[in-house]
Image 1: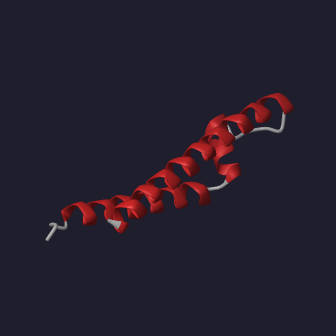
Image 2: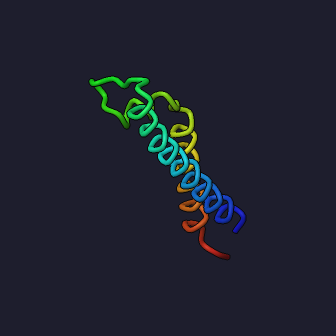
Length: 81
């Protein structure tokens, strides 16, 4: 039962980190356009903002989501005795 709770917590953590990363990139993309800082035409405004923020939050979110799903699967697969 503990693995289920840890897995659900990791999934919630992943959703919060991923959502906050996307929101911060959306806010920063508005700054790129208004302030005239510049953005790469190869990637577009939003991808440039995501690259400026960094890939570490998305990496942490993906790893914690995978771990959460694995823990939930293990806890649900185990047969109660």
